[in-house]
Length: 111
Image (cartoon, rainbow, N blue to C red; front, side):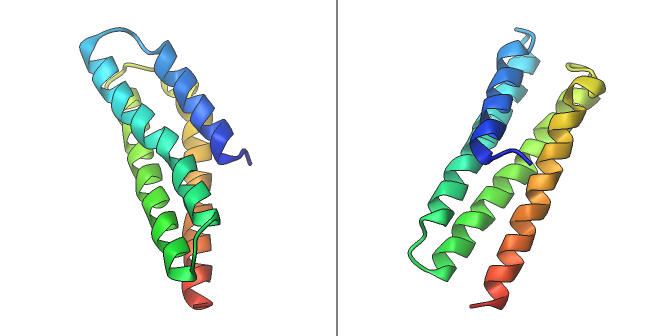
């Protein structure tokens, strides 16, 4: 699994390669924002002051991952980007979602 910074860099590369059409750029900017903020949430969680703070930051990251997954799906469904080109990134997004969910559940259990 890649780290959150590598994930953000992949998102940046996808955004940079999108067509310059209005719809691709609007969806791309949403993807850019949500996909690059995951790492910031993770970093904040890692440096959290308390377990509730950790949980809050991880939940914020999870929301951003869910949104990233949505924008990736929309790029494919709108036929802006071929599904094959985004399949690895979508898989990575879903793996990160699973990791964030597991981390949140563990933290809540251990409060």
